[in-house]
Image (cartoon, rainbow, N blue to C red; front, side):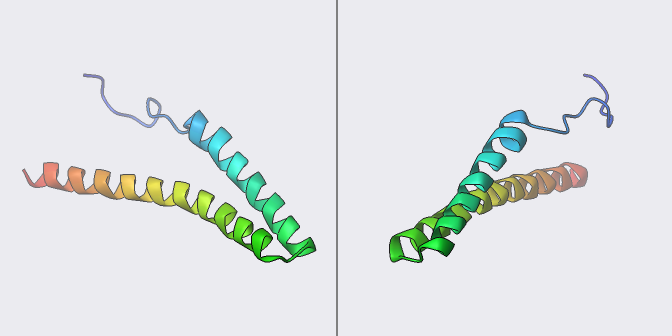
Length: 78
């Protein structure tokens, strides 16, 4: 098994950092602009859904890191 170091860990996950986040942030910007120009119920709902998408991506990362930290602490206790 290879030893762990900062050099052999991936810093960027291409699908997550360079595709998913930019696409959802562009969608959020477009929906917010549309809701600002024409504040109808449909446009405001669209803006809220567009806001929820990047927050969902972020919360998925936070949850995965939380589980990873718990597993590491459990391994250290054993």
